[in-house]
Image 1 (cartoon, rainbow, N blue to C red):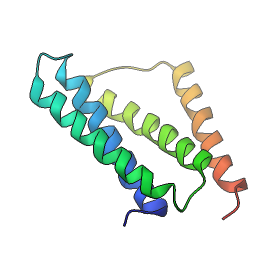
Image 2 (image 1 turned 90 degrees about the vertical axis):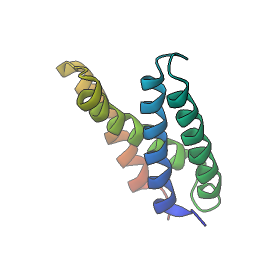
Image 3 (image 1 turned 180 degrees about the horizontal axis):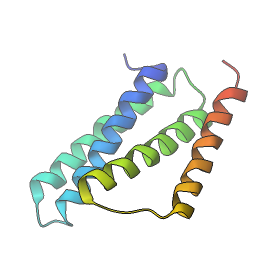
Length: 108
């Protein structure tokens, strides 16, 4: 089903979509967005459970969290007009460098 890097990319997509929907839910003021977020997280975690069959836990979690962070940062600037200062961008870059480094040194 959803395994390997393709499954991980799809899981990151659903995690970002769910997090965006959760922000749009504004707590519980907009229940349709809240339900959308719950469905997105359910799909994300289901796919991640299949990805764990083929990729190491540490790598999956690092890529999922780091990739989600980077994409969510772009989405939050684009949709919610949030801003980042140079220090925050630098820290996010360090996280991404760590994720890439883990992938490069991990066994296939």
